[in-house]
View (cartoon, rainbow, N blue to C red):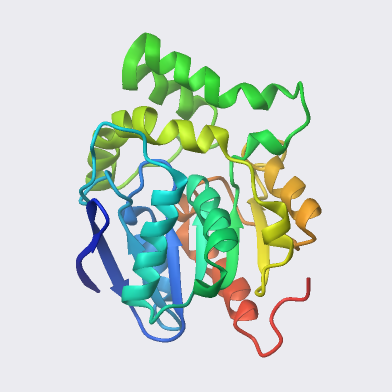
Length: 272
């Protein structure tokens, strides 16, 4: 594994690169830490050049300004990582908020993406009016306003199936706790407002796959993937496990990523 720091507009991004082969950029969700993907990156490094990074303002990256972070900034950072570390084009995997960033990147910088796997984007605004899941972001914002990061973090964890049933790596957990205020103050508004650019995604010149875990059926963060896939005419795939199966049981999750990423890199790609 090689690590380093990449200068972007207003921040320096900590990154890690493993392996050789086609470039695969992995974008993390809430907490923004490259360490979410360390185990599966090791598993995939025999077939891909796996690029992970701490998103701006999180963990070992800089850029925490106390002002809101826009999706434009998040996607510009991912684009810069692809330009600097992947010769300008990469497969992209994003989970949770990372899938929101991946979908935005695919819509705004299609020249940089050769294929996208968007795993469980919590894009609750695509759900029907009146769906209780659409209250998720406002409820968490209210919990943060009332009780700060501990209250919002507990509420968040209670809503994610399987959390509390396995142990996070100690250093990753410590970094995540240090990122919570940044998540709920700087990043939350952009994720809460997200709606996919359906026209751009339908016309993307590369394959897009939406996905969710087989233990997450019916959750607020799994159902939007099905709706988005339907709206843009993309395939939907079921992954093993829970929202963060890449931490709980990385080997089968990495195997699922390997299969889909290999198909995306195939001579004809994935039919849409």
